[in-house]
Image 1 (cartoon, one colour):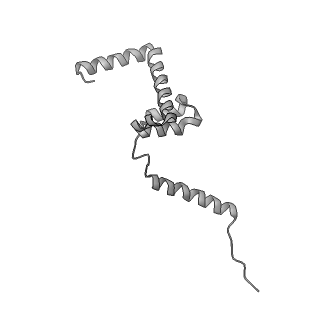
Image 2: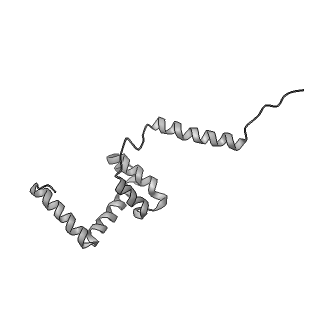
Image 3: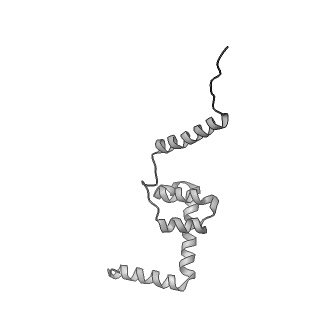
Length: 113
């Protein structure tokens, strides 16, 4: 009489493979959140709706890529849309606009906060 081995379920094996692929991919790409930092305040604004939910990861990638994002049309579009939203927010709100103008004036004259 042959003994049956205790086999794992197919779903369990697939989950393990998918989990390990994610870890291996991160190691191969060698980019982690510690390598390129996004301001926590900006990240909060992005999550709160500055970008659409489905585009959050793309935006994070665009911000982490830096100047190289301009070479990729998708990332370039994301950066341009974010820029437009931020400019609109600054120019539409009088208090924010005055504070920004004051910061720029202080920067020009060499004053510190």
